[in-house]
Image 1 (spheres, rainbow, N blue to C red):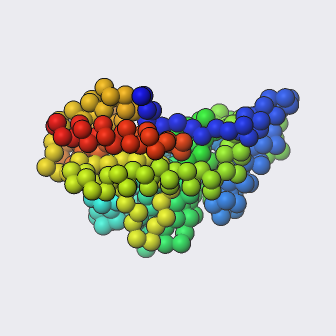
Image 2 (spheres, rainbow, N blue to C red):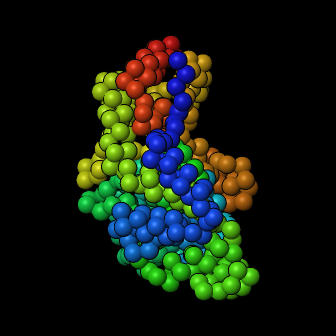
Image 3 (cartoon, helix red, strand yellow):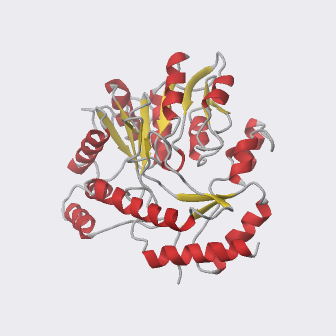
Length: 372
């Protein structure tokens, strides 16, 4: 039995929605774009949504809209997908990394505070794996220090922290819709904010610098082709209307893993933190510290040989060769991130995973642990 690491949850409703758009003459910049943006903003509880072609594009445009550029520093995490740091570089600013909390894996507020200088313009926290624990403390830190807060919620759709939905804490926030995310548009992302000028600027920047009401060949500023097509928006609308169903299905798989792995003393398994409702993006377990990185890699290899999709999650950003060359970071700079990253293991996690498949994964995992 081959079990994939992830997969989308597509029904006839999504297929019909996409086909309906394909039967119209407007495949991009049509009515589905505004419908998706409005619906998504309403679901999260923000005033404006600007749909773009990826979470990376969303982060990039947010930084530009916030006026962040050369000479500015943005404090963020080394334990994330590379886009979190890349977007700061794309804006011409300087990413400053701070180590993570060893329990939540999110940016540690105390360590972040220690990196703030007179050049710091913003904090860029991430709800890692969908877990929002501690993000509100980072938002509070930004307010206390008169900094902007760009909330990278690309992994956190549907999660809640202390009664606040993920995506409502930052001055601006971003979500992403790659096929392994909580909902998908194939590729895609969205920017949320309550500040109309920022939203309007992002709308222009995503569409080659055109202003609302201007002609197709009238460009008010340097812009990009970061548009999301109506085909993708139709898919996103259908997925978003199923959000509560999709969350319940993801929770079902999470609980199946928890029931089978809660007694496994060699692993640290995901837990819902106090005050948080987590709509998990991935299911990542961690080997206890007595295991070596080599043993983790051997475990990955054995699971793959058994047909189990799996991966390390994440590789530390500061150890990526081009980041080391450009920013000067070295191994040992962020020991918590390195210790965690050396022992993480993402297991198959998608909405339609069956009980039989979860049993197969857990048996293969425990058998491989026994022979390390």
